[in-house]
Length: 355
Ligand code: ATP
Image 1: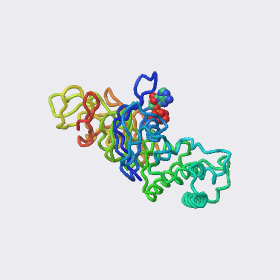
Image 2: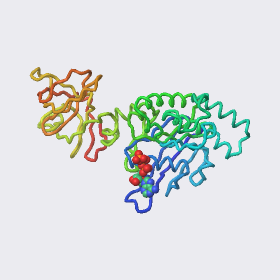
Image 3: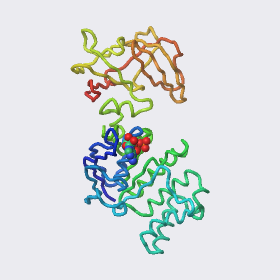
Image 4: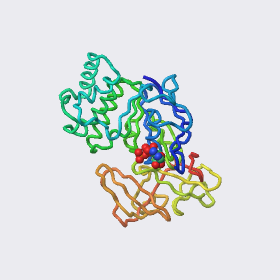
C-alpha cells in the first residue's frame, strides 16, 4: 500500500473555458479512504484519471509512495481503477474477467488460480465464477469489478462512482461492504462521488471540489460542522445549509436575517456578509409564546417519516427547518422562529468562513 500525493495538479483540455483541474494539492495517507466529492463537472473524474495514468496532466506532479509517477504508463503505476460502468468483458465468464489482468502480466497459472479463488471467496462470487456479466445482478457485477481490481493487489484503488448505477437499498449494502473490504485490505482508496451522503458515510476524509479547485478537505464531521465556504455549506447536508445575506441589527449586537429575524451575537464582520444555519438548528414554536426572535410563514411541508422539512418565508428570505417526526405546522401557519447564536455560521462577502 502507498500514499498518494498530488502537487498543484492541473489539467486543461483544448478549447475549454477553464481548467478542468486547477492546481489541486492533496495528500492521501497510506491506507486512507479519501472521498473526492463535488457536483458534476467539478473535475473529480479528471483527477482520478490523472492518478491512473489515463489522462496526462498539463502541470503538477503525482506521487505514489515515494515514487513520482506523473508521466509513467498506467501499467507501471501499481493502481487499479473501478469504473462507474464496471467495464467488464461481456463475453468472458466471471473467472476470466478476474484473471484477465494477471494473464496479461504473465503471472504463473497456479498463482492466478489461487488469487482468483481467494478474491471470489472474499466477495461472495465463488458460486458465480462460470457466469457471464449479462447473467449477474447489478450488485454482483459491481463486486466482479471490485474483484478485478483486488486480484491485482494494487498499492492504490481508484473508484469512480462505483455504486451510482444501483438502487438505493443495494447501494446502502455495498457501501457497508466496501468499507469492510477497505478495513480488511488496509488499502489506500480514492473514491469519487457526487453524492454527499456517500461521502459523509464512507470517507475518512472528504475533499470537496468545485470548478476544478479544492474547496476543503477534512473529516466528514469537520466539513459538516465547519464548512470553509458557502459552497461547501450548501453542498454538504441534505438539504444543505440555509445561507442568507445578513445585516447588522440596528443599534445592537446582532445580525438581522431577512429584515425581520434578529440573532444576538458578538461576531463582527466588516462590509457585506452572509450567515448560515443548518435546518436542524432552526427551532419552530407556536406563535405567541414569546419563544421566537422572529416569525415565519409556512410555505411547504415535506414529511419524510423520521423527520419533516418545513420551508418558511421569514421576512424577505426563505429557510428550511428540520423537525423530528411527523408533527409539524400546516402550510399557511405563522410560527415563531428561533436560532441560537452558537449555531450561526458567518461568511464574508466572498462566501469564505469567518466564524
Ligand atoms: P461527473 O460527475 O459529471 O462525471 P466530474 O466532476 O467527474 O463530473 P470531469 O469529468 O472531471 O468532471 O470533468 C471536468 C471538466 O472537464 C468538465 O467541465 C468537463 O466538461 C471537462 N472535460 C472532461 N473531459 C474532457 C475532454 N476529454 N475534453 C474536453 N473537456 C473535458
